[in-house]
Length: 464
Image (cartoon, rainbow, N blue to C red; front, side):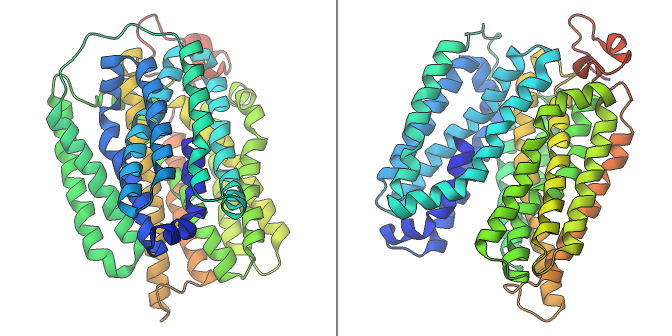
């Protein structure tokens, strides 16, 4: 529901602007404020889930997101819409990480690969179907129906939660860390706002750099505080788990940069640089997600046969080579070549992301699952913003270096942006290569090492 809402709303911005009597660009604040509301409340979601129970919080977050969607549909002015989007983002800040907490706490370690693989399929389908669904609704109905679409989904979701998710005893209550919450929220918002400003245009680079630096300073202070506080709002102890650190801050972060930049760079290259029609560009992007879905059925089998380290190395290499090939060989009329490369890139991404999202939690102790889930979601948001920002900076810099306006990018600018991000992503191979061959074996069942790697009771297999 959240993924579909984020992709569908972009299609309706011109019609919504007409209803509110503003320019379409003015509605971009509705997108930004949603992201900021998420970033602001995300650090507290683990504490909230512990305090009032993950099942109850998840159900209330679904209710809140659904009611906020109805308020978006009923909005008749820009301030009303902004207020509704703040509520929607706040609900999403609890909905997504708490859902993952419930999944991780409910699934046995040996079932984690299948559980995560199944749960990621809707996240791939939603952004694929979002633009065409939004186009149909806006063309034949009206833009409020985009948000009313969430009403039946939200009601069904709440009923399913109450029916199938069992309540769990809450851990002992702990005091809320207001200082840690404030510093973490300020760091997230500062970095996200700064990266967004850096990606907009070269004229905003000073403001963007100042916000990013301020966010980085707050982040440094937050890390110092969280490491010393007896009851931090977000525990960083999980970063001592080797597999979690590699998949979130190490190779996992680096390899995500080219992947997260593709939806931003490819439409520019196809339509502005190469003159493809919007339909052709949409079909090619559909090939990327289609390739991802193709290999979801063999994720468990691949990890069981080859192990995490080999799968991460092979899938990263495949995805990076296909992305570089798309940057180098995309040309006028070469739809089949580009489509084939994007399918291959999606197939590599499928194995890569499934491997990363399961290995990350393979050795996390049970008591750290909440903080691990929140930190995972927080770092994904920052990585997405960083990828778009790097791509935009390269596009603007190369366009200006060639004497063109930053608003007029060429196909060469897009090629250079993709190749630069691919080069950064290639650094992840060193990080993955340093994983032990038996990493995650008790999860995948790979080889004879699985028995040796089975963690003793109570230890959850934590790496020191």
